[in-house]
Length: 153
Image (cartoon, rainbow, N blue to C red; front, side, top):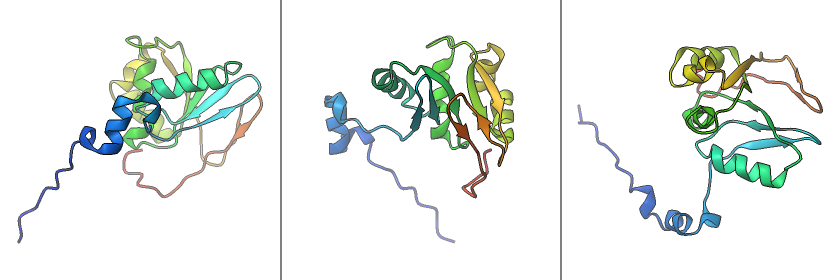
């Protein structure tokens, strides 16, 4: 049997495209997230590691529509880690609605540091189920299951 080999990636900061982003904030590429903006509210789909930048841009582009909730699409680490910014050490959010499917809801409630967000009521997890629409003031969201590496949640 051959020994396993490790592929070591070049550190991101040395990549020419990344250096441009470090030197000029306008050149930065962030993780993708989508926002739905209505006449009076906005909702983010996923809370990426770039949550602070994304919520800032959202507040600048839609000052009339404050962030009213976050929908988590699934449990890949880049889709929910931005929630940490809602904690008392950063934003100190109060009962920010976080919409999550059953397994994701349980994951957040049972695992730190996410469970602390629940305990301190920084987030208020709103359970959603596949095929059942969530009625928001000006839009409806219908979650559905996608066979996409669901080993986490």
